[in-house]
Structures are given as C-alpha cells and as structure tokens.
Image (cartoon, rainbow, N blue to C red; front, side):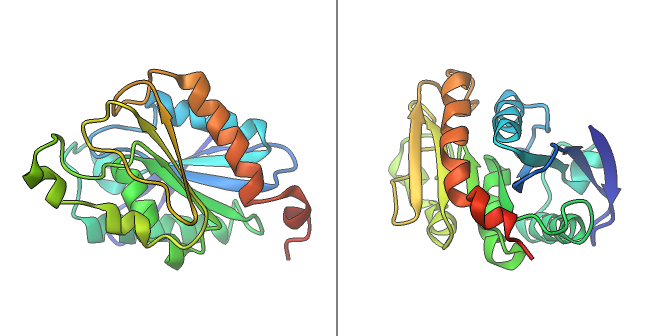
Length: 212
C-alpha cells in the first residue's frame, strides 16, 4: 500500500493506494461521515475488487486528515473528492477506467460527482436514503434524487434493517440486500460476492485492454 497526500481546495486529502498487477480498472472509495477508511465494509470491498484486478484507492476527506470528525458541507466534500479523482486519473491511475463509490456519506459524494469525474460506474455501500428512523418526516428528507441522478451502472449494497432506509432498484441500478444494519458487517462474504459479481460487468476486460 502507498499513502499519498493530495492538495484540494479545502486542504490536503489522503489517498491510500492498493494497486494490483496488470489492472483492468480502478475503484476509488470514500468513507462515511464520521468514519474512516478502515471500516470493515470498505476493507472487504477493497479486497473483492482487487481479486477482480481492480486497483483500489481509499480516500480520506480533508476534514478527517485534519483530525475533525464532523463532516464538511456537501459542496466542500464534492470539490475535494473531484480534485483527488482528477489527480489520480492524471497520475497513479492514468489510463484506467474509473469506478467511484464509498460508504454512506461517501456514496452520496460519489453519486453527486459521477458525471463530473467521468465514473464508469458507482458502488454505494449503505446509501443513506433518509435520516435515521421510519417516520414520515424522516422519509420526506430523501436523498434518493442523488442516486437517481446517476446515469452509469450503480450497485447499492444495503442492510435489510438499515435505519437510513432501502433504495429501490432502478434502470441502471442493482440493489443487493444483506442481513444487517448500516454498518454492513452482517454478511461480509455476501458483500464481497456482490462486488465481485458486479465489477466485471461495468468494466469488461476486453474494453479495458483497449483503453487509450
């Protein structure tokens, strides 16, 4: 693993690079609002993607690098994420098809910036459809439009008892449900299988080998 600090408009972000030999693509993942890149679902997704010959980068947002737990505003998260993806696409991941993603808040960032970063697909771990709870007020504050706006293939892996809600499948969206809650640790083998099954269809080896 290589750790790389990347300048962004809101301070340095930190990229944890997990490369593979002869990669067919790259997966870039962001963390949750108050968590870090060592979350068990992110680690599981990393190993699953690497087994399919995807180099993986786990990105720490500038507020986390600075030692803060409270997340920055969405526009700052998006701008920092975009800066990191553009840096990696022009350097360490140059020429590779890129799949963006993350867990919870990190998944929201990947969805909101998918078009701008040129993502070939989006991987959402525990997408927070609405604030915790099943009240009508909570469900009215839906983040589903962020997910619906993604025009490339998307995979959502969601716990069946996630208090942040359950997104529906969509035209370009596959939803895999697993036992457990928002932490997605109830069935890590199932999570790994979902990632392994989905990634090759987003970036086929034949297409990756003809990248420019």
